[in-house]
Image 1 (tube, rainbow, N blue to C red):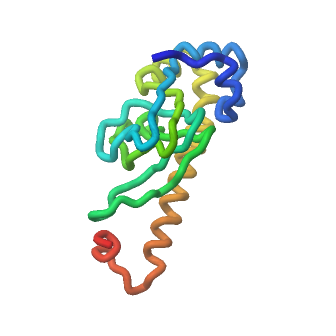
Image 2 (cartoon, rainbow, N blue to C red):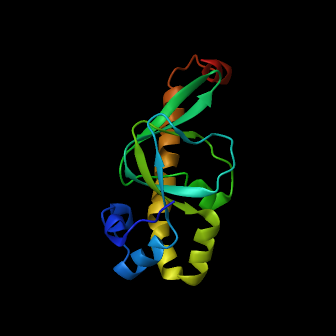
Length: 162
């Protein structure tokens, strides 16, 4: 795996709060990951160990509801996904699949923890887009739940199996 350059990271708004020196430090801990269209990046229910910063391509986030898989969102350049393990060390709550060829920068949870210890101001700057991504995901989930329950005749069982 290769590492990104400062110029590549500067091209992403998600890193807009970072100075060049901080971007250089980040280059040393991020890995460039490439995925082919239709390739699963991570699966719902599997251990989560890293966060992804989408540099190119599109990613679909989907979740199994009963016997069907529902797309919850489609992500484009500058999106962050797989971010929950940096917060709660849990499992992936959804599946991420490349819908086109994808280039993403990957940060492992343990590396982020080390970075937070040695470069705390930079880690705090990185937390802003991560927390923002968590808030967007929560709002999306809230909208989805409201949409599911818009039908007053619906029950949890019928929503789960439909």
